[in-house]
Image 1: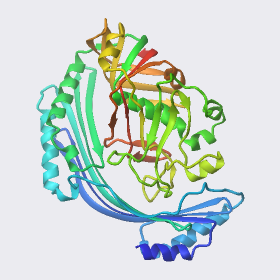
Image 2: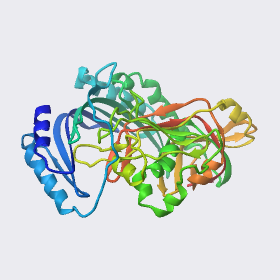
Image 3: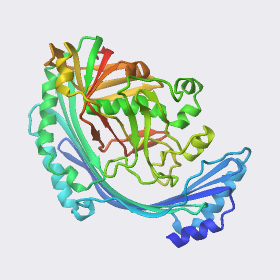
Image 4: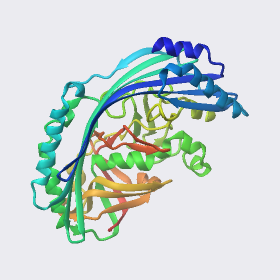
Length: 453
């Protein structure tokens, strides 16, 4: 494979050219209710060529590896048709390396029958309650080897093994439909999906309890969010606004997202870190062969950096951050997050709660959307806070607001950093789901607009 790649690059005539070839295998199992809807094992191989000629990009994806030289030629020809400007790429070091993630239990060593039986057991636990309307158990593992090479001389081989599972319980009483879920997934091995019987029972009880929960009264509240919802907010509401391709093309956002501007209290720091080995968003190198790194987006309350590809870094005269990621060989790299989180500080959850006389405690998220700086998230669970204690359970809790105002209203940051991966993932530019992690500590936010369903 490496000889084929080197030969194709030598024959290329372009300002810059890169190749990515991916060999992989995957297992998928999906239960919905009592039915096994899908079970499969499969292999795949494919690649892509991206060529730059006088400012024009050409891109070709393929499955026929043997004809790689022809695809290189086609990508160069495509780029030539678009050549009408000057485009530079930020410089990066020449790299030759073979990277392999470490796993405790390789999913490929576990039989399909064992994986099926595990999923069926979890599904049966969820369906054991008569109040459960339906269930969902979705398992996936994958192993991939990606070859990257460019005309600058880099040749990088990265092997990645992912494993994860989604668990879902849905209850219904008349028009009142409630759900609870759990999702785990990372690069550490098959053991992450083992021993989840307690989680199956927990989501079953939560879904049932939500049926009798009191609908929230809309209004302005002090809110404490748990690490999972903190991560969703950090990723969705702020992380996407830090992606340089989005900033560069949006004049309003360029004016708002000015380096050196204050975005919160001194204790507020938000990080994207692709170097966290084992986490779902880990890569030693991105899809352009750039080493990943720990990038402070906000540090001590001040906007410090943004996330870059080589192209956006050159356009904005900043440095690459290792955040150009492609979902697969069929996609071009675009600026994406990796493992994004809010750094912990000194508050314990107990102290944060005790010093909140009235408010709402929100846990997790079951959906939401963002529109530039505006966001809306639905909490998976919520509880009324009275006199510094958790009181009755609430439902239909929707948090909405402006991300920049919300960041300024954070007044307490917890000491318990937790990162979450899972089978979900990030979506952008038609590329989803891309494996990422997000998280943070418990966080208290003043003056949050809460609306019921």
